[in-house]
Length: 389
Image (cartoon, rainbow, N blue to C red):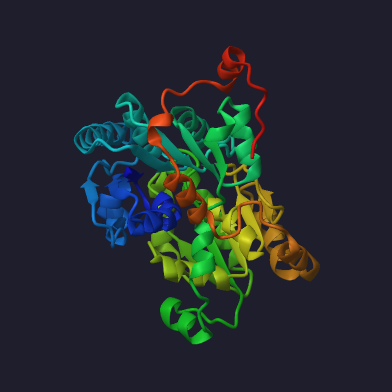
């Protein structure tokens, strides 16, 4: 089967990569990777360099490096043009997208209008404070095949009107890397990150919530100020390319006493995740990967409100006193830390890519279109109600 996978940034590629590696190795599929948006922007680290080991990679610059919603929309227009041309020339049997960012939306839109079915990973999730939520559901409605990260998300997709046979539980592909990549010794961590491995390490990942750079700078500054009161190693990850990110980037550039991280290779990133004692910020990794690792996470602000999580996440407002109290509990309350370690993870077991590949290996893509709402199928064919797998 000829598959076109769409990625626009490190955030979706890092999750998609385990699936892409298995597809690349399979003799049943012919994979092409479309790399656009932030991957080709030097300001965001030129992460297209991470996309190695694939026979077919289409590099399509599209990001207008301008910190406004207008720039984001214009960039989307350029990327849609590139996708339309590539899909027209390649004529794939399936377009594969992941998540809730514009790259996935554009890939799904271009595929639908080209009469090519779409497979979507990470549909059915929730969250109601950013544009991501409605974009995610829009991608699901444009998609003909779904790989959900949790059973709850799979059930929600069916409730949205997706036919049951189209919905599969796979899990979070990011967990596959955690299972595969080894932990590092203390000396390796010290050499690579410059940290003292004998002190607790706190990873900060704070992305823009609004297009207002000042608001985003204020939130990140509050987090860093709160952490300086604790005897910890602070590891600060650079924010994503959303509008308003220039504010957080300015704080990142000026931050003292922190270890700055920018576009780490996946083996380095996983080694770091396995070592940290706490995640702080608003990255989805604080809800998804942290649960699998059994570490506490503190979500600051509105970005991830409403998202499914395992109970290891404390949601706080962007206020200094709330952030400080949550840090104290996460680092100092032994019973709470033990409780977090005992929690189960609803996002799979580290074998998501294998589940995706199994479905694709057995798939006849010509059966995926046309797509109809489950209620219509039930009414016209007399089928019973579907329930999520």
